Length: 203
Image 1 (cartoon, one colour):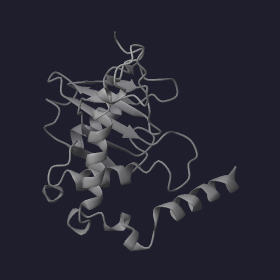
Image 2: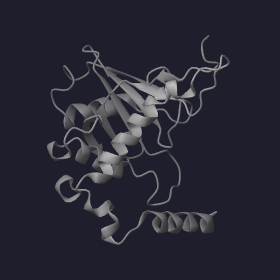
Image 3: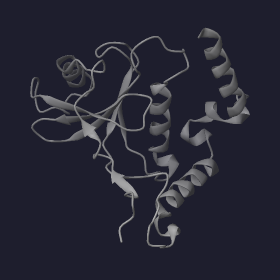
């Protein structure tokens, strides 16, 4: 008997139209990509299409498909509106991906980052582009109605934990992530507490 809830779903299964209020200026984005990454698009005006992932992110995330090649990229951007200065740090995401995809990181399974834009133009907020790495998203809970071993579907979570352990065992200076280390004087929990206390006072 099948599980009452699918244990995982494709990363591309939640794609849909861009939601209202989160639209992108596609011609401006295309012109920016053409300028910053010459050769990625076949020619100026060759076109690209944009759809949006609907699940699980605080930063709006889009699938950008280049025409006519069909190459797929993922774009993550800050949401619109007034934000805390340290919140939704897409530049930090980009830095971590760039470090973990470098040779010194010894093969972490992360998509290759391609481009970081720290300005509001051309699409309204800072963003970055990376390769699209299709995979499976494991759901948080799986319930079976036939009494099967629930550990049969635990392997995606185990794989995630293994790579997190590898990440924590990685020496940070060679991969340029020293500024995110506790040795830098910015421990995670106090830093988070400070951020949210500032946010609470601004409400």
